[in-house]
Image (cartoon, rainbow, N blue to C red):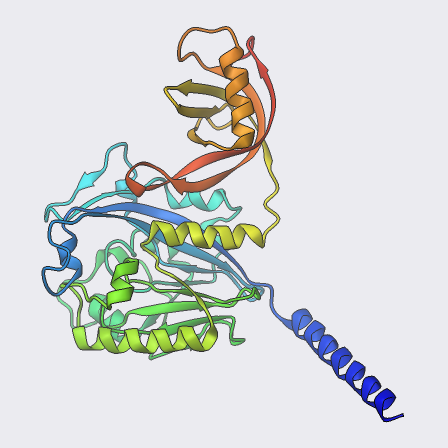
Length: 371
């Protein structure tokens, strides 16, 4: 009898826990995260990212990501990439000789690719106010800019003779001091981590997945930076940076969070993989001109006129075989119909570029071309 009672008790406890979990999942706000590339940064003198000669003679490719967070109470944009003047065919070598920079596309076009417009945002925040994070900030003037008060004072304070023009249009301002729960439910929290700049901050995002996401801002710039706790030579305060690193790591451990270093191409792809696994990323149909040249393949979308590198996979091999079997002059494009998705992949020198990932080859027509 005791065994039966114990069994019934155990079943009721399990059932109760399952029902509690269902209630929790049902009440949890649906939060979504998108990441976009606001630029490419090739660091020609990596030694500036340490206090000594650790990286002398080294170079490194950075990406420059920014993020869109969807929440039932409004949308938040985090960071703003490089200035749109850098949307150009050739990279720009800035005067100091440290960085070579370029931006792939405008904010309007990039938002359109994920179904957003500039006016869709209630909030805007940046990890800090350096040029590679304030690029399109002024376009966000209708959103409420959430900023640490000391960071605001460092760029737009009343006592400043010269104010930062990159954020001068931002008039709807919410000044904060310390950590800030954006929507009041713990899903999107700005964490104050000063040192890189006086009011530097990072972002915690709980998407309801196995692990929450923790975006580093520029607390770290690349993985070795995090491993060795290296502090860039141009940081505002070395001691504050080190203290913020300790605070950050403790928080990441407490939350069992996936840490995403915002300037890391590898972390960009890691986060994309996480987001793709948890989204209905159904393949789309593309029609366009496919060209195969010396182990490199490109696809021109007839609808948009844009050209993409083609990711090599099993489905791609069928496309390549059909092209090679077609009758045409060397390097002449062929019209094809395929299914797939456009994704950011690693291109030349570790830079991120949008590539076409083929999931299904449908047909090739030697008699058709893009108009």
